[in-house]
Image (cartoon, rainbow, N blue to C red; front, side, top):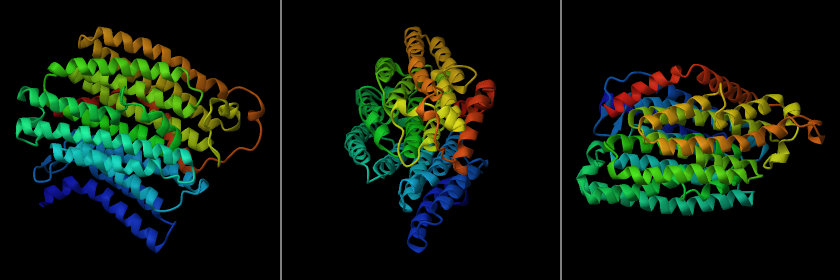
Length: 467
C-alpha cells in the first residue's frame, strides 16, 4: 500500500479502528468511554475526508477519494456523530449498556463510507453488506422489548433475500462484462445477460431503499427499533442505498430499458407510501410509510439524469437532516417510556418547547412547506422530472405530496393542544440532544433559504461522476 492509498483509505481506517478500540475499552474500562471515542472517531473521519487527497483513485483497493466519495463520507460520518450524541443519554435511560452499541454504529458508518468510495462491484457489495449487518444488530439491540427482537428478525430474514438478489445480479453483470469496474460492468449495451443482472440488482436494492413492493419490513422496523437507530436507518442506511443507486445508474449511461421499471417503482412507491401513512395512528409507522414515499420521490429524480441526480443528492441530504430532527425530537421527549401514538404528543409543545418545535419544523419540511429545505428539495425533484419529460410522474408526485401534507399536520396539531398532557414534570434535555436538535433546525431553515450552499457542491460532485 502506497502513501497515496493510505491517504485515501484513512477515513475508513479511522472508523474501523475506532470500532475496535471501543470494543477493547469495553473489556478494560466498561461503560465509560465508548460513546466519547466513537463520536471523536466519526468527527475525525469527517474532518479527514474534507482534505484534498494527492490522488483520486486507489486502483489496488477499489476505492476512490473523488469529490462524490468525500462528500458522502463527510455526510455519513456526521450523521453517525449525530446518532451517537442522541444515543448517549437514551441508552442510559433504557438500560442499553455495553460498548457494542457505539462500536456497531461505527461499523455502520464504515460500511456507508466504503459504499460511497467504491469503484468496483466487489467493494460496492462489501460496503452494502457491512452496512446491513450493522443494522441487523442495531435494530434488535433492545433485547428486553419483544417488538425490537421481532423487528430485528424480520429485517434479517428479508435482508437475506435482498442479499441473494443483489449478489446474483452483480454476478450476472460480471459475467456479461468480464469486469468488476463500475464503468465497464454496468453498461446496458452488454446484452440480455446484463439486463437480467440489472433486474436482480434493482430487486435487491428496492429492499434497502424501501421501494414498493419490497417495503413491508419498514413499518415494523421503525416501530420496534430503538429511536436513535431509526434515525440512523432513515438518514444513513437509506442514504447509503440511494448513493449506491446513484453510482450504479450514473455509470450505466442511457437508462434505456430500465426506464419503464424505474418509472413504475417510483409511481407505486409514492402512491402506496402516502396513502398508507394516512391511516396510521402510530407515529413511528406513519413516519415509516412517509419514508417509503420519500424514497419514491428520490427515484423520480433519478430518471432526470444530471439535473435529476443533483436533485436526488440534495434531497437525500435534506431528508437525512429532517429525519434526524424528527427522531431526535422523539428521543428528547421520551423518558423511560416510548411515545408511539399520536395522542401521546398532546400538549408536548408546552411541556417541552424545543423538541416539540423541532418536530413540528421537521414535519413542515417533510411536507414540503417553505421556507424549509424540504420545499426546496421537492421543487428541484419535480422540476428535474419535468425537464426530463416525465410530466405524468411529476404530476403523480405533486398530487401525492399534497396528500402527505395532511398526515404531517396530524403530527403537529396535538403538540399544541391543551389537556392533561400539557401539565406535569418535564424531562431535562441532554446537552447532546440539544446540540443535534439545534443544528438540524438551523440546517433545515438555512438550506431552505439559501439552497445554493448545498446545490453548488452537489453540482460539482455530480459533474465529476457523470463526466
